[in-house]
Length: 162
Image 1 (cartoon, rainbow, N blue to C red):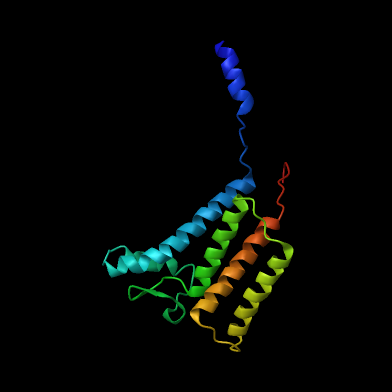
Image 2 (image 1 turned 180 degrees about the horizontal axis):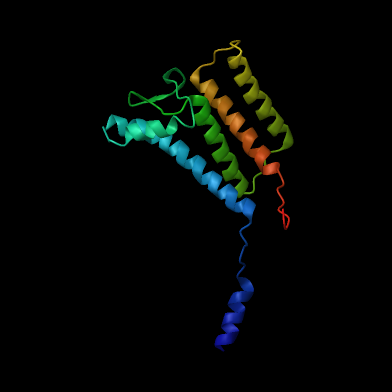
């Protein structure tokens, strides 16, 4: 009788194999979430005079230029990453979250997001357009979506001996 119950239980339980792609995407999702969360928390830590806040600003200097002219302010303190980088990491996080929910971004939207995001970046780079922070963040979200979808569309196959 016990064997029958165990056999029935195993028959209905599915065990999913974790592929390399799923593992990498899970790590990227977690990292992008932690970057965005940390960027939001660092100014709040500064406001309450927590000693680690200076260390976090130093850590974020490695992933963004963090000019205070291009950053949002929370509680009177600048965020450690600029508005565009905040948008890029947020776009990557949201796209990967949608991927795990099995919601796909169509090719038309993919091209649209890429053209708008990269176009705004190039216009600002060549001093043709000086957008407000919210537009920079929106362009960053578009670039993040474009980068994440590009990464998701790559098929990486590992061969034996390669």
